[in-house]
Length: 243
Image 1 (tube, rainbow, N blue to C red):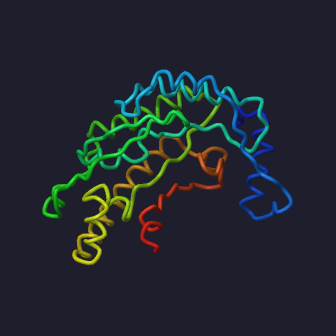
Image 2: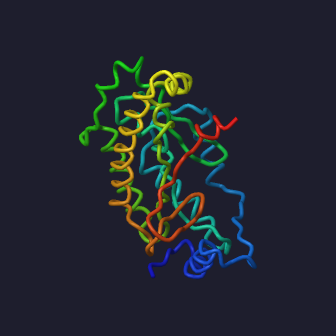
Image 3: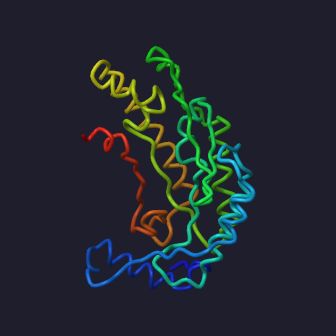
């Protein structure tokens, strides 16, 4: 087993989590503890405003290294892993020439991304192309590599969310037109979902090819660690329509 320096009881925790996912831990309590964080205090000082630009990935790697180092002595059920929040939404639209915008969250230390709708209407859909030479693809690859170098056996990298299905259509034409198109242009909804599926395969495949698995499993900001190669799916549009 590969250990993590920032989780001395890593083996014990993985054994516990494995039992949890096998539904064999009904007699146990799992918990993640929150601590006062000097690293988050410094983050709030550096990012007093929510809106910001794409940060230096080396600085983000340093942020995660400092944040996770604060938790070395905490024997809870958390796994030390960094989350690629800079790419959690905006990467998918950015790869299609969308305007990527960033917001700093003072509570979590995340710098998240998003894009306004890419298309004026469905007539522009056929212009969409994935280009592996795109600057946002290069930034994505570079940040993973920088994080891996800084992690160096101390912590790992969490999987990050898919933007697929209706979530992806949101990025193309916005939420209102997405819901209208379900009734008025179901053909385009299907095409957009298929396109988004292929784009997500590219993004997630690249992530796992570079970051790899940790002891045969996936590190996760939500689930800590899960056996196997697991993607993180966002189902927001489906929740919003279940009324």
